Image 1 (cartoon, rainbow, N blue to C red):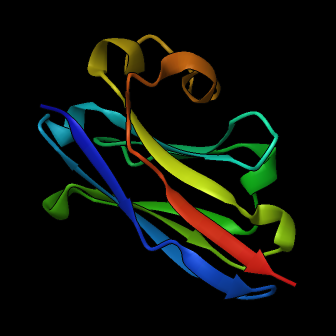
Image 2: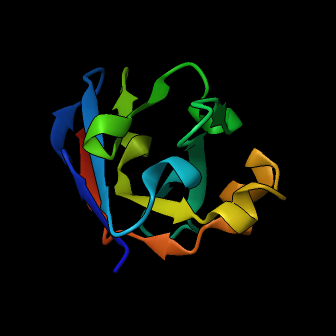
Length: 130
């Protein structure tokens, strides 16, 4: 069974940093792509970044460039999202998701963030206070 579990969320002051973790199990980690998403209250879900389990080539949406860094530890089957210079508007539930090989092989990273993810975690709440 594919499982994705996010951790590391919490309350942080504006300007602070947080590192989210996404622990994956139940599939061959190297063959998948993992993405980070967020959904703020009253807003649509937004794709932030994704990374291939094998190539380790990161992709960032415009909203994530400069302040967010995605990384991967294959030995731990874990993907991280380092967030810096956080702003109140970064307050959201953050999700990680996984795209299977058949989709990864035929889909651009941008498209993966839009519709390529098949498996989702339950999310981690990040609250940034002003």
